[in-house]
Image (cartoon, rainbow, N blue to C red; front, side):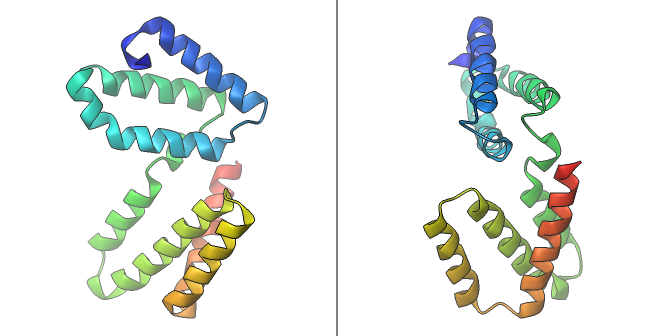
Length: 148
């Protein structure tokens, strides 16, 4: 595994750099990939004790190069936790908006058919229009943050 060998880490970063530069992957895909690794880092730490520090180093280097917006990693979790810590009656409305925002965010990087499926899902859930509108407002706000 690349986390265990310094030479492999350098080669992995070079490969990632080349993939981004030639357009094989975009920054959203890089962010999703790192988010998935973050989910697994605890398990990785059992076999590779320095997994967390290596991952932090990778994230720092990739963010420095501009291939990753580190602030967007695990943003859904932070939004959900904040929502659950607020008043319970408002939580369900906020959670619906967060769900729709996350669904649309995922669908944006997919093919046309999957985008259509996301739209059908949002429509079939019967969420109040206010919650869907809030989701799109949140989406626009987060897009503005990542554009800078």
